[in-house]
Length: 238
Image (tube, rainbow, N blue to C red):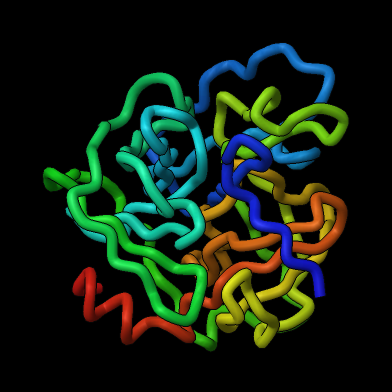
């Protein structure tokens, strides 16, 4: 089983993916590029729950806001440093609301973490799914600002604008980077890469996964949100 985390570090980059839920945020004009973002895929036109994660001011991962003061992301994205977010903007460099984490709660047995923000943020919060919202064979969407290339260091080709890709669920009982329960999916029109970690997988209009690992070619694993709803509720109240 492959285990390649996708958070931005000196040697690698985190995954961040976002899903298809309605949004009032208009998409900016994409930058000229010879390579599509998210490694193929498409430019997102909505994502009001999307959050770009920065560690010590450096673009690192993706995330989602799930309640006024709480952001859901991958545990491997928040190992150290000052964690901050730009929330509700498709452009990771401007717009939306910025906030800083004042507390990080990490799940002991999976690649999940919840950041408590230094302020309440008025946003469209990502609705969290249950086990009935995702199934094998289903086409789902993954979103993020991660790497758009495979021929150079991933930090050099992070997407400025939020991207998404369609993938097909192949298992709802796979494993994430820490051995937690994960949704595994295979490429349809794109795949996640470094910088997409912590971002969402959406199915049936709800967030059903948090990006954990990817082989950058055809397979990605997302921590299964439904398996950890009790823990999420105990921390964030949703």
